[in-house]
Image 1 (cartoon, rainbow, N blue to C red):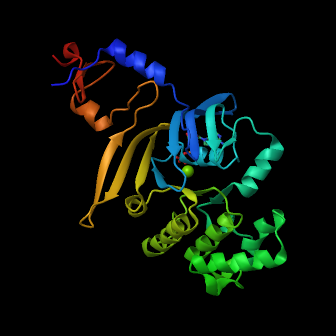
Image 2 (cartoon, rainbow, N blue to C red; image 1 turned 180 degrees about the vertical axis):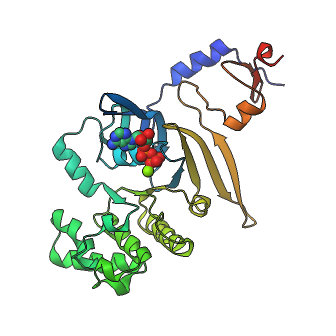
Image 3 (cartoon, helix red, strand yellow; image 1 turned 135 degrees about the horizontal axis):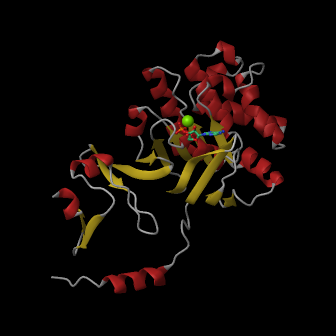
Length: 309
Ligand code: ADP
Ligand code: MG
């Protein structure tokens, strides 16, 4: 039997470690807060959200409407500025960057795909011209732009749509062209806010396959906000957001026999907070305080006895 170190000893060791949070991660959110103020009323959209995404990962973010998913993506894309905390994407600090750096960051470091197909593409440009546009802003040569646009549209399975304008494309084709636009300047990160939300199931699957292909072939770190259980099913990690905080995580693995297994985790923040699922606290009528017990390989959580008697 192994001896369990004392709590004091464990705390001393934890203080000694003190690593840089999120070192090596491509996306780092540490205690991220976003408060909106409208007519003197404050809405806390993000209340201390922690999230790490590794280079090359493809993750899904799920959560009820109003839980803060779009707020998070808008911050990570440089469109919105957080109120407090840390947000870093590919080394860029989103709280301290200047307006000029922010513009550059949005043009070169991140690609964005919106839910509304009409918001992603300019209606009067062809698919190829839409993909070339961000490369023009980045100062790439005409020849380079044309070659890359054709390559990307081919990779995304819409190679036959190069000369068509958005109105001549289906919703699914428009979203795949939008993904090509998003990765045109080889960004480190792609952020997609419910990119399949307006599509039927079969088309949504095609668009997700396209995102996955970009992630695999180009190695772009990808974060997809989705309501679609099918999409969440097909990523290796799904992060759940509740009330402006990351609360749970499902990890999926391919087993040797080809089946996929999923395991659900609660997230533990750096100061040791865990959000217990509502189903658990309600089942045992846990409120206000719980008793904790450190065992050799787990921590027990019990309802406060006085409350339950
Ligand atoms: P989700 O994308 O998960 O549905 P949002 O990030 O859009 O959630 O919204 C989170 C919370 O912040 C909601 O309560 C929403 O009403 C509020 N909110 C979002 N954007 C704004 C804004 N521009 N002004 C005021 N409140 C906002
Ligand atoms: Mg949203």
